Length: 148
Image 1 (cartoon, rainbow, N blue to C red):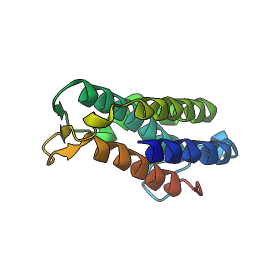
Image 2 (cartoon, rainbow, N blue to C red):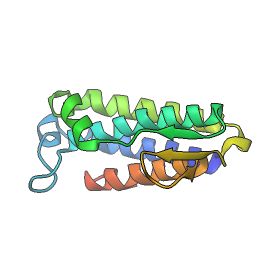
Image 3 (cartoon, rainbow, N blue to C red):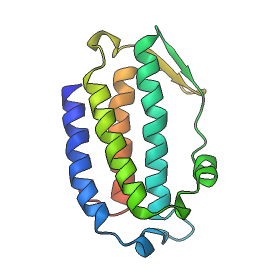
Image 4 (cartoon, helix red, strand yellow):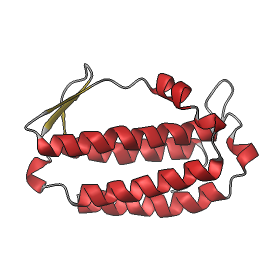
């Protein structure tokens, strides 16, 4: 977990500075035609942090994890990040991920093989979920112009 934790903390430090350079007006513009805006993408990443936080902790407390599927479009629609202040979204995303790095650093090593099933997907391990979380964040941050 130490490599994942270091990678996540480094990503947050690099991304936060770049995200703070984006204006509120620019953050509300779709990044591609009919696509999400930077606000919506960052809102999605905050939601990803929230969902994965619960996955990480619950999987560490149980012999296995069954977690519901994720409706990303529905969550963005209901949570309305496009109506939020850009600075709020940036701060929340950065601080939540710093805390997730702390959580990941304290996961018991013996729990990294805990099987986790999300929706109807094939089971993966808790360790895989942690690695995939960082890859997912990198993917979406690249969409909004963050160079990591």
